Image (tube, rainbow, N blue to C red; front, side, top):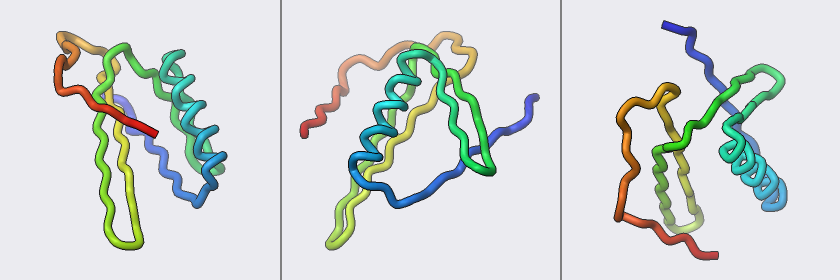
Length: 91
């Protein structure tokens, strides 16, 4: 079994910076290569064609939160795409 690689990062960013980060993440998903690095951590990920997508949103007085999770098997076997259960996101 291989070594576990982890990357943790947290910061306050403006909307423009977040947009740039998310666009770069999208590009990485499209290209099948995402490199995350900071001063102390680094991990290279290779998203496959099928990605499990989990999205959670929560709002309470004075605070809102979106949690986005993408997961995939590095060596997919017999995984099929979920049909139905569509999500709509509007801006």
